[in-house]
Length: 298
Image (cartoon, rainbow, N blue to C red; front, side, top):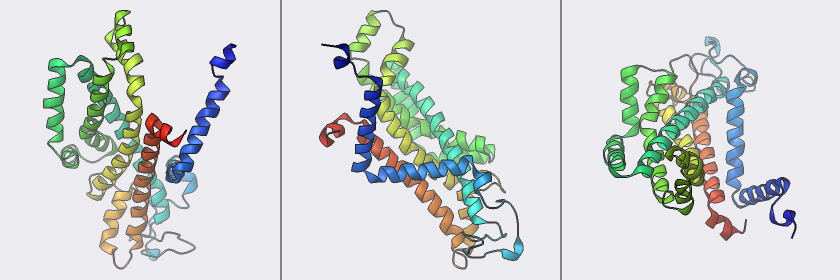
C-alpha cells in the first residue's frame, strides 16, 4: 500500500474541509447570511473614511431632522449630521469594543479555567466556589455600569468594564472541558514522558477543547456588541462626538415620533450585528460537533 493511500495530501485536506463548509452552509443558509453581514460590518469598520459619504461629525443645522432621501439615504439627526455616515463609523466602535472584550475575556477565561480544571483540589474550589460565584452574583451590566461610572467613559474603561464579568462564562466552560481532558490517555502519556504542566495544558489539552470555546466566543461577540450599545445608550460609552450606535439611539429617542429614522437605522445595525454573530455561532456549533456532522453526512 502506498503512502499516498494512507496519508491525505494537503490539497485533499483542503478539499474535504471546503466540502464540509459548503455542506454546512447549504444546510444552514443563515450562516451564509451571518458571514456576509459580518464581512460588511468589518469593511465598514476598516474603511469607514472611504465608504462614508460625509463627515459623521459635520453639523449642518439647515437640514436637521430630514427624512431619508436621495441626498441623505438614512436622513439627518437633530444637528443635521448624516445618519448613514454615523452608522458606518459606529461599526468601528462596535467591532473594536466587541473584539477587545471577547479577546480579553477569552484570555482570562482560558488561563483561570485551565489552572482550576487541571490542578483541581483547593485551587479549583477557590476559583469555582469563591471567585466565579462572586462575579456571577452580580449582574454583568450593573458591574460594568458601576466600573465605568467610577473610572469615567472611554473605550479602554468600557472594554475593562465589560470584561470584568465576561471571563466567567469562558472560565466555567474551559474548566469543565479540562477536567474531562486531563484524565485521557494522551495527557497521561505526556506526563509519563516528563512534559511540564504548562506544556501539557498548552500543547495537549487546549487544542483538544478549543472547539466549544470558539463557539462561545462567536456568541460572546454578539453579547459584547449588545452590551456596548447598552452602555453607550446610558451615556457610559465612548464620549461624543464619536459615532456609536448606542449613543445614536439615546440621541434619537427624543424624536421617536416626529423623526423615527433617528432610532430605526442604528437599531437595525445593532440587531443585524447581533444576529449575524449568533448565526455564525450556531453554524460553528453544528460544524465543529462531530455528532452533527455524522448525522448530516458531512
